[in-house]
Length: 237
Image (cartoon, rainbow, N blue to C red):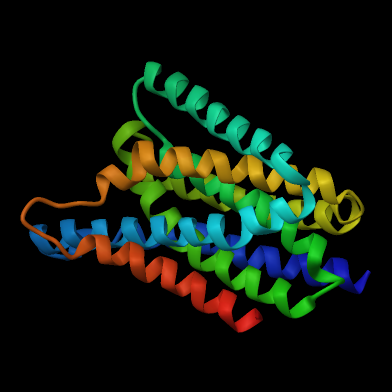
């Protein structure tokens, strides 16, 4: 029972970064126009780098450790195809929600993985929770701006939506510790499926939005985001 409560607490704290990032997005108007635009692209780039670190340092390595051989490629490709189908469906309805989709495809499997590894390696689980929170904050920021532009929903409605996502993390972590810890192949397949979807969304929707005309520094935000994840990974070696 203690491990389950620990998993719930860690996932809830990591999930709380989503509405916090969305709340911060409401203050970007305080910056001058040019500076605001560049800062927003920096935050988007940092989130992309953090997502890339999650894929390359957590989801894929942990996934291929649990799914043997070339079979691991199947869920990876299926995840990309699923993200493509969702992207096409959303575009036909008028607007892209790539940041929102990437946030969910990252948050849920990582929370499951965190719960699954908590009993075996509590320190790694804590580090993973920190990385999830570090990814969720810029993702919540970017997803709020994306939904505001594409869906036209009110700020209050968007914040309520992001708050509603917080319990998803604890539920996923409990599933990880109670169910997926005994099903390593299924867990590995889920992580690879998520990695494929995230990679598709990054190259299709997120990365192309990072550059700013006559500004060359925002892509460095992606490097900082990846370096943050890499630093945490190095600490667990």
